[in-house]
Length: 420
Image (cartoon, rainbow, N blue to C red; front, side, top):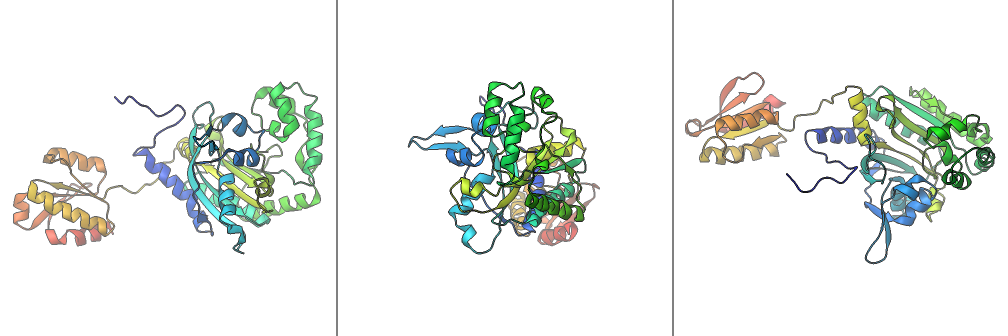
């Protein structure tokens, strides 16, 4: 028994479950790669100020959940709690916005970290796939990203998810709404921390999940009633484009999301089979974030989808992904000469793209065939001294049990033919 265990609120991905996670990541990324998004990878930690400015100093992420630390050299760093601020920082640092080809379209996949109470679907270490379109203000971009996420989920077979959609306005109309909401919140019976949050960013109070707070928000002013004409027109075009693409959504006037940088379009993917942790992904437009972190004005939009919660959503719907076998051919040598010959053939099979494995450790026939069964291989190659003396090996179909002798020099061609 190992002395060490994974830290509280984290998990290990191990076979065979890890194959499902890889398949989910690939399914989410596939529509992005097909739509002009290039891959970006950022460090697992950043300057703590990047998140304080970008995500928002009043958010739970920054005030309660961020893993922040000081290095031996005195730098203030934080494990990344989300992806957007890091990706935008990387794009600005590399001057991608100066290439003349806007928007800059990027996708990413990685681990993120938040210190919170662990529960099913909410971990201190979690995995996301995200996409960002940087440097263009266009309703078609917002619609594109929502459609691509919907496409990814449907390619996995998911059906019981809903898309919630709202507009958070812009710097013209949101201040008016902000003042009206603050007036409303000042009349409620709120704890000191929530009152403080209401003064810094009152929209965050709408995102409070506690029933004691939500019960008091009945009758709160809605942002949609305060949108300026430009924001109304923008939001209507996003809605029209999504509808024309055949993607269903629900208008949710209370949807604000948990990050300060969102403007105008905001959306969330929820799955009702996951209980309290129903959000499987979400995103929106963040036109002012670049300026918040010291860059030029670069209107942008993006989303992040949780790999962990998407896997839970698949389980809730009883969906088992059709994953390719990790091993197609398993070689079982009986004797030293057979080890040499079959090991060489396994290497040849791998070179032509056939997934092949080998019975290591000098096991006998019975133990080696058990391993062949466990591997999920379609075929087993079995050879002993008598077989090799005749220049053949035994090819066994693991499904039918049929066994055929084939020439040693015919192994690769025969298996390429059978496996297509």
